[in-house]
Structure formats: structure tokens, C-alpha cells
Length: 227
Image (cartoon, rainbow, N blue to C red; front, side, top):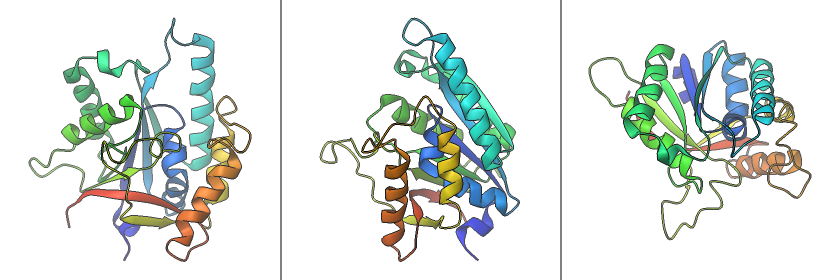
């Protein structure tokens, strides 16, 4: 039995729309193909004047279509201000993420890596850890941190934690589903050699797969598992 076999209900927590597909789109597709329930929580939304409201609406629609293609059961939009999470009272962020963790009844959380460059990612990680505190008999049994291109790999490893994966999920049969889902984000896809290009995402999946003699994989760091 693999780790994936132990997952019945998963929640992917994404600071921004598309992080969930970039970090674990292939794993989502594999889990839903196994008949497992996967929810996604998108924590932030772009608000004026920093972001164009029409663009924010378009990205939300793109996310919903991407999730439909991946088989996501439910998408939770928390609507905190993007790029301004450091201005949000920490208790409010903790409460909102805690509520969605509880309502999803997830046994597994996928969260952004704490060492990511974007401060939103770090704050979401910390609030997710508050929500997943192992208290009582009902809490997520496992927590995995995913990597996000142009965030995880841009951080300075000598100034903070470096992403060193402990777990590789074989997505050889699902890498195309991941790329198709990311293609739904027409506003976010960039031409190669940009990291957020379809070619770069396939290359990362192939490189992570080659680390463990697989055609394609997604890499994660283990935060905790209770067995």
C-alpha cells in the first residue's frame, strides 16, 4: 500500500489561483481517478487598485475550469487580498483556513512550501499548520508541502529552508492532465523558456521523475504523517 492509497479525502491549499495546479495538478488527477475526494482552497483574490477586478474574475473562472478537468470535488474561495496577506490579522487568516480544513474533513493537506519567495505562501503555510494542529481525534493525518515554479526555486536556500523532497508521486499517466488543467489559465501561461510555460512544467515533471526512475513525477516534502 502506498501513501496515496491511504488518502480518502484531500485538501489542497493554494495561496493564489494556479498554485494548486503547478504544485500538485498531476497528483490531484491521480487521486480523483482513484475515486478519492479532493477539494481546493484558494486563499486570495486580486482586488483594486492593485489588481484589475475583471482580470481577477477571469482567473477565478479559469481556476474553476481547471478544477473541473482535474475532478476537484469543491473549490473554496477565501477571498483575502492577494499580495497583502501580511496586512491581514493573523487570527482572521487562521480562522478561515481552519474552517475550510474542518469542513472538508480532509485526512491529507497539500500546502505551499514554507521557504517560498512569495510572502503569501509562507503565511498560508503557517496558518495551515495552525489549522492542522494534532488536537483531539479529528485532524489531518498527513501534511505535504508542494513546490511552485517561480516561487520555491527562487528563494535563497542559505537564508531560509531549501526544498528537499522526501516524497515523489508518479504522475506519468497524469502529466498531460496537469498540463491541460494549467492550459485553462490562459492569463498565466507563458511562452518557453518562461518557467510557467507548458514545456517547462513538463520538463520539471520529467526531471523529478528521473530522480526516481519514473517518466514523470511531482515532488513533496513531508511535514507530518500519523500512522
